Every structure is written in structure tokens, then in C-alpha cells.
Length: 242
Image: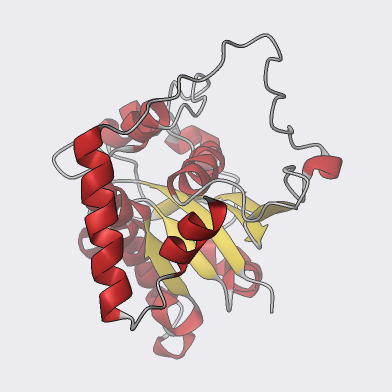
């Protein structure tokens, strides 16, 4: 069964949905089995209220730009259809989910909540567990995982979702699977293959075990052989190779 994920980000009029702040941009892209499919959802939204000056400094979206944009109610059905049944991948998920839940609730209690539609992976919590005590905002993670965010002069929902997708894949192990010849399964689809080793590279140094280390190794094998009733395979291989 394929695994479908939606990497998502929002921009808003301010910081608190309980205070009447609204979503003004949604950017989301689809991954299936950890590979982008090209399917995206991107909308600017008229929030029917003024945007805080501090928020404009973050994302650069103005009231005038949003005057002719659709309301959340106009795109809600399409948005819900896009995310339904997927795992949402969001950085600092409680912020975005809180705003989206508030938008859904404005349409009526029967609309439910994000938790009724999807599961959620919070990449901020994931980053904190992997890198405790370090900065784990999106810019810091881009530096740590060498993800290009040079176009991120201002926050933007779709751009940030694209960057987050790269960070998430790098943070959770990069490509999904490897084929037997050492190339990723998606190599024929345009993803870069692993670079070949330099044939002129210097040979790797070979370090011989010391007398003490060899004695400790032999003692450990003898203990394993005794505990297994004479079935220590490593010891049998060493004896057979003499």
C-alpha cells in the first residue's frame, strides 16, 4: 500500500486564531512513497480582516494583494479533498493546524477538524528529538542538511513547503530505497545517482589488532562457544580458515 504524505505550510494575518486571525495562504505538495508526485495545492485567501504589520514583515503579503482572492469557504472542499487520508508533514504543526481547524469550524461544526481528516507529523518535534539543544527552525535545518533556501528572503507557504519537503526527506533518511546496483530507484526519473569512487584515491589504511586485542577477541569467542554449546559460528569459521 502506498504511503501518501502532504507537506504543508500556511501564512496568516497574525499569531492567534482564537483572536480572530485568519489563514491568507496555503501551500502544500504531495509525496507518495517519499517521492514528489507533482500534485500541489496553492491558494492565496482573502481573510476579510486586516493583516498585522508584524506579519507583513514576515511574509510580505498585503491587504491590497488579497482583496480579489477567494475566501477559505470557496476553496475548502478542494483543500479537504487534497489532504484527506494523508499524513500531513508540518513544521511546528500546532500553529498551522490550529489555524486550519479554526477556518473549518467557521464553516460549521459538521466540517470536523484536521485530526478527523489526517494524521500529522510535526517536523519541529522530530528535529528537536534528533538535535536536542540546537536551533531547529527551518533555516537552521536547511544549513544542517545542506538544503538550498537561498530564495527564502520572505516566508511563503508554497516555497516553505517545498523547502520543508527536502529537509524532511534528508532528516528521515533521504531516498526511500536502494536497488541492488547501488542506484536509487528514482535515478531514471531524473534524480542524481551516487557519484562514482575516484579510482586514484589512496588506499584505506589497514590497522592490525594488537596482541591484547587479539587475546580479548579469543576470550570472547571462547565464552560464546561455551554458552552456545560449541555452536559459535565465528569460531568455527576462524578454525576452518586456518
